[in-house]
Amino acid sequence: MTGLLDTEAVRAADERLRRAAETGRPCAPVRDLLGDTDQDAAYAVQSLGIARRVDGGRRIVGRKIGLTSPVVQAQLGVDSPDYGVLLDDMIHADREPLDLGRFLQPRAEAEVAFVLGRDLDSPTTTVADVLRATEFVLPAIEVVDSRVAGWDIRLTDTIADNASSGAVVLGTTPRRLDGLDLTALGMTLDRDGRPVSTGSGAACLGSPVIAVAWLAREVARRGQPLRAGEVILSGALGPMVDATAGVFRARLDGLGEVRADFHGTASGTATEGAAA
Image 1 (cartoon, helix red, strand yellow):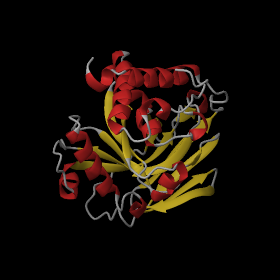
Image 2 (cartoon, rainbow, N blue to C red):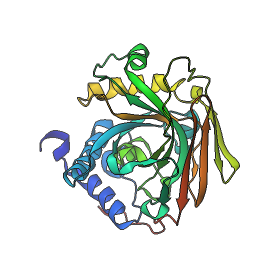
Image 3 (cartoon, rainbow, N blue to C red):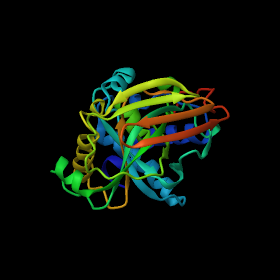
Image 4 (cartoon, one colour):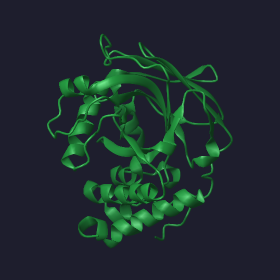
């Protein structure tokens, strides 16, 4: 490897996050290795982790956008979106049981998932391009997870950690975009029938379509464009909440609902030391 991928700091950050994921013990932030603002180095770490999982038999099936909601940005002390990669073992269907033991510090948020019918490979992608390329959308519950202890993250920490990704539960009834106003779309997330988060499409960079256009431009610029067939998680519609045992149900206006059935207990109860 050459360039960023061959730096000692990038490899050390990758190893720290890898060990946390494999042991189930959250680690110290990696910004001490990467700095707070070096996105290129952080995405280099992310790429190493994804490449290792693909080499192990996993398949890339989509991307996710993180930190699109001002509320979520405020929760985590960051001020910019980021993105991660979705792999086949991260995708689950509506009502499929999910064992919390596979996660370290899981939280849940409701989103709109886009499924592309065409490539989006231009660094100047517009919202019109996104609308034309979208085959259908689905309601989704994303399980966000951090390998960094206590969610003590800044932008480089979450980027390196594959945008703090864990899993996604997808609804099973597709909807075309024709006639849907995703900006005005309302969202309610319940846990065992009690509302725990509310929001709207406007909370996601103004609209989930705007968020997907941002992602398309960013990944095209980095030489990893969006491809037909990929699932794109467009970002949170409201505040994320702790994922605990129980039934979480997201209702999205015009898109229907999706349910995630969580059982067990998350594994991240101990903290790995800061040494890389």
